Image 1 (cartoon, rainbow, N blue to C red):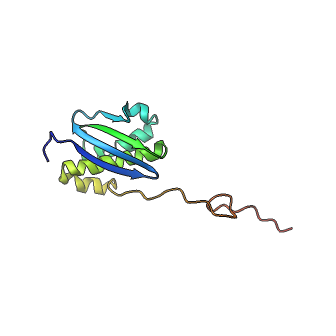
Image 2: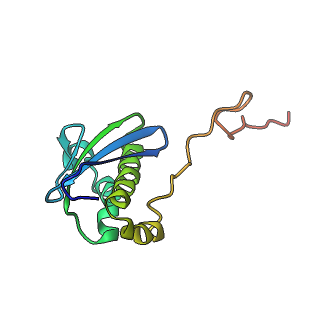
Image 3: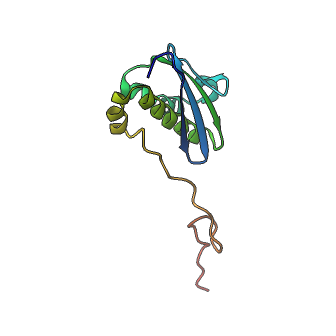
Length: 130
């Protein structure tokens, strides 16, 4: 795929959906029109979102993300998933490194629904003998 092309990909985590647009650039990341540091204020979330770049050794793209749904933790995971997919589209030789780091697998864990008769999904009310 030519460097001048724009590459898009979709990533998901919990209930968050991220659409990523890769363009040739210097590694600048914007999320919903804001810098990554503003959109994801915690350093750990910034680390999660930029993991694919570290797995392949550097960022030679400018990244624009549109994320909706979920909280900031799910959004960071969705950005990471979308970024990994987009990097594979840009260069198929990056696939083994991203696969080994576990960044191409969709993390299917989500909140379990509450059941009737229980306080939460699995927490039962306190048992009283008498």
